[in-house]
Image (cartoon, rainbow, N blue to C red; front, side, top):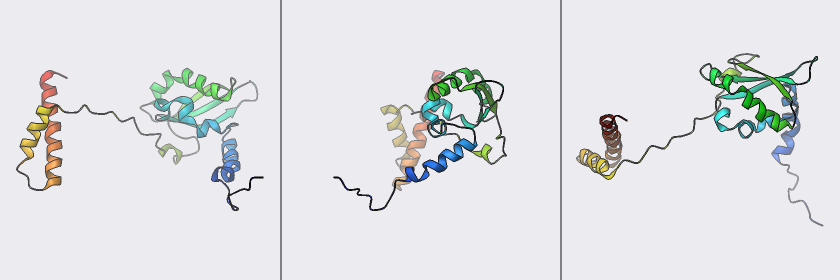
Length: 171
């Protein structure tokens, strides 16, 4: 027989499971997975521009209306992708739970929720400068005595030289 090694401690997830369920049900989410795994359900590109606010079930018809919060600039983009978003969410539910989607730019309960950040934009890696650019930048910053300042000036010189070369190419 295996003994429990927790010595009276419980996992945080087991302690919070009931509270999370109650909080999500108060917003109309029968399944809290839509809230907790939003980025995996709708994709990282959609998750960084919107978040679910609530689900309203109508008495007359089958299905619910999902309210999604977004910023003003992203609302037209989200409107065009609304059907794709609805399909992904319904796949998470396992049936056609969401029949309508409402896009809002402010939270229905107040402005505190509207201040939430949706997510960071994916980082775009800059191309590495070529050897000639690095050598030219090192030559420009060589007279500086302080190492940290010289490295910062080299980086700045690389950026300026690369930008000037790209501008001449028409990039």
